[in-house]
Length: 188
Image (cartoon, helix red, strand yellow):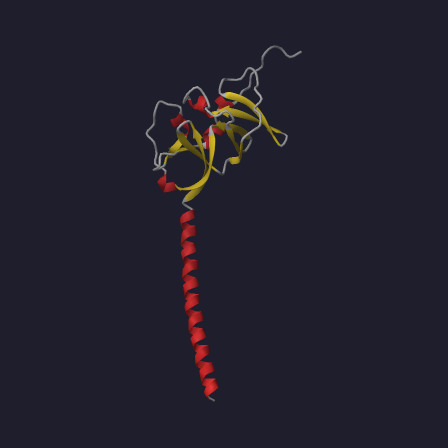
């Protein structure tokens, strides 16, 4: 009978231990739920460098980032069009983001990285000096910039506390000045 009593006490302790563990795990799950609610207020961005400045674009419009082997120049295009690249048999126009934004003479990198952006039927690459990576930014951390006379302000959603400029990828994709639709000579 004494053995049964000890077994009973041991089982009760085990039940109490399991109950405490279950409560602790339940608290951890509810903490994760509140973290998921917070994640609705933040988004992932691809970060890249143009000269000394760090910029980013939301990942929802970024198809891919890469460092192309070769960018083939296309004649009779504006100076901010570097040319085209082939990615798995698909041709992508490449825009020198520095020249397009009027930041300086062009990219510093000898082998620039490209950020392939796409939305609907508009798609092209933005050439950048360096691709840094992907990070998450809270929407509340993005502060708006005062409007300016420079071209960057047309494409800027804001700036983060650590001075990273958040660009509006949709503004690039819907900008008709990036579309080259010219014919040179006659077609016979």
